[in-house]
Image (cartoon, rainbow, N blue to C red; front, side, top):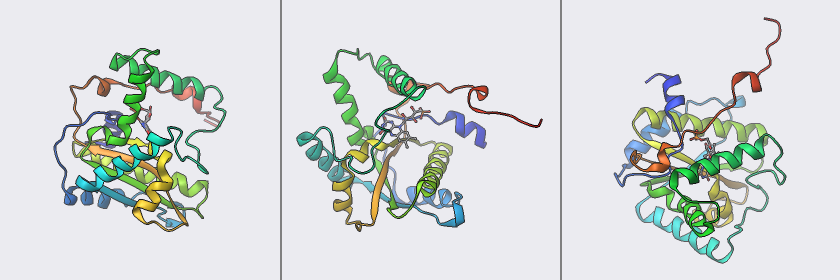
Length: 223
Ligand SMILES: Cc1cc2nc3c(=O)[nH]c(=O)nc-3n(C[C@H](O)[C@H](O)[C@H](O)COP(=O)(O)O)c2cc1C
């Protein structure tokens, strides 16, 4: 698979088969992804990989926290800016509506939408969950580099026939996750990721999200 194919083929997978993935396979993916670039070669990433009982434990943890406080513990690192301006606001709305349309869940069925959202904390049925951790001393640059690492991981996973969904939703419980994993106060869980074999027959996985054309975001000068 070439890079462009992997890039285009990768979509967020939100329903997985229960086909297990062993530790060696995940190690292999991380071994490839570690060649991602980072400014100054800081490699500002740490990863927790969970499966089996450990995965069930973090799902239970999220269920417990969000059951009591549906707003979560987002705290110092909100998932989105408080006021999301255009065009970002419309893009976010559109992809959400497109997803619920694939699932046949109407706007007024709040319970079904909420239940679907809660599937995040079950890793959408994936056998493996990953959590990406960064040192709190790192700035916006290093957070971007962690993002490159995550993208690399998603692409090598794609090449090997797996699917992924990056999951900022886990940011809602980052405080509890930090305690659960025993990470020091100077580190923080940024994001989760579901990893597994995609259930290609599930309608949610037929969602192809849109992208703005090049002329909308690129300015060319001096050509
Ligand atoms: C860092 C990051 C975090 C994300 N968090 C979530 C999430 O918590 N739950 C979810 O269903 N999708 C999540 N997504 C998926 C995005 O909604 C998705 O990437 C976007 O709509 C584009 O669709 P595509 O990935 O299918 O191309 C996340 C994506 C990224 C890059």
